[in-house]
Image 1 (cartoon, rainbow, N blue to C red):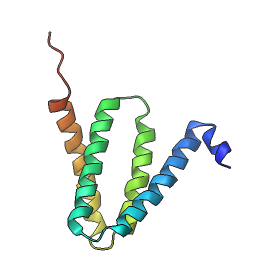
Image 2: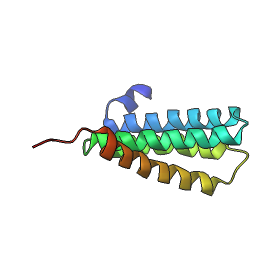
Image 3: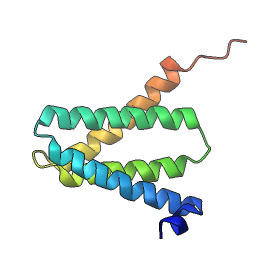
Image 4: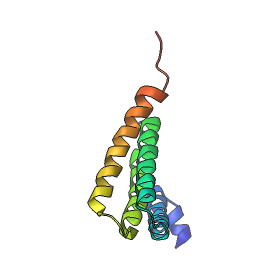
Length: 111
């Protein structure tokens, strides 16, 4: 089954989604601090936002699907906070990460 999944891109994305779902779920079960829960969500959002800005148009959907797997597993395992808040913080941190990376970290073309 593993070899069948790895033969095409769709299978690789599905496998990455499942692996990241499990990793996110286990990670959230191990964390007992609300502050750490939000820090991980914000850093994940910043990272995805910067990555989406960096990658531009090539294979964005694959990375978004894999990231959704991590965040879905992470949010399913969280015990101490409202899940909707985590989703909103994650989406806002993606936007902020994209904005920061695009406007401050990417060198501008000087003409």
